[in-house]
Amino acid sequence: MVKAGGDSTVTVLVAFGANFAVAVAKTAAAAVSGSASMLAEAAHSWADTGNEVFLLIANRRSARPADDRHPLGYGREAYVWSLLAAIGLFVVGASVSIWHGVSELIGGEQPEGREYALAYAVLAISFVLEGISLFQAGRQLRTEAHRLDRDLLTHALETSDPTTRAVFAEDSAAFLVA
View 1 (cartoon, one colour):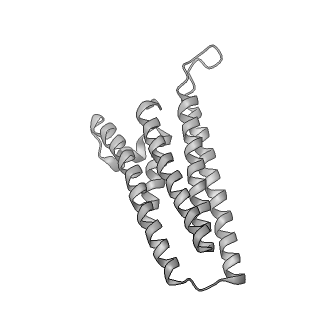
View 2 (spheres, helix red, strand yellow):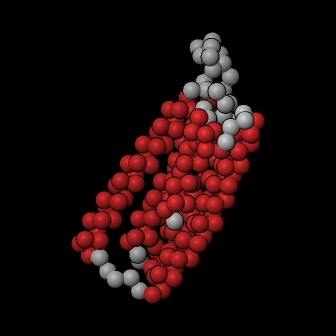
View 3 (cartoon, helix red, strand yellow):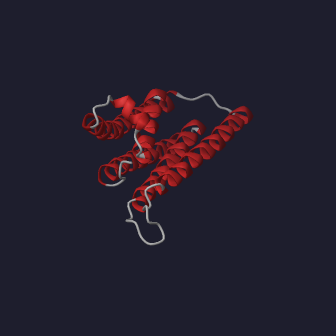
């Protein structure tokens, strides 16, 4: 099992910073434009930021040394916290999607030109920040993969470090959607 800690913590902190900045940008854009879509995107980004908190807890708690009560250590606790992060993302994402869909059906408005410009600016900011986070996760996985003589994707699928895998998957998905 790959010990969660140093590199994984850096990767999760970079993802936290990126998601926090994206959430702030989307919240500001939603406040300025009054866009329900941007508000839904902001809520999703805040959920992503919350997930990183769960992953930081996972790294910290799973790195504790073995003791009399847990002679094999706490390493597997990272899986529980990563599962909670995934469930949280799913629940918040589904709730926001349903809320956004219903609100658009009830009183959807046609966006204005400035709303599009603001949305594209926030999209560009998100693209850069998510790219930085994806780069960090990829760099960590690539270093580990090289050490184990694997390719990057094989290692990403087979690594026993659930926090780095979660950041890599989340950022890859964000990049594909953007």
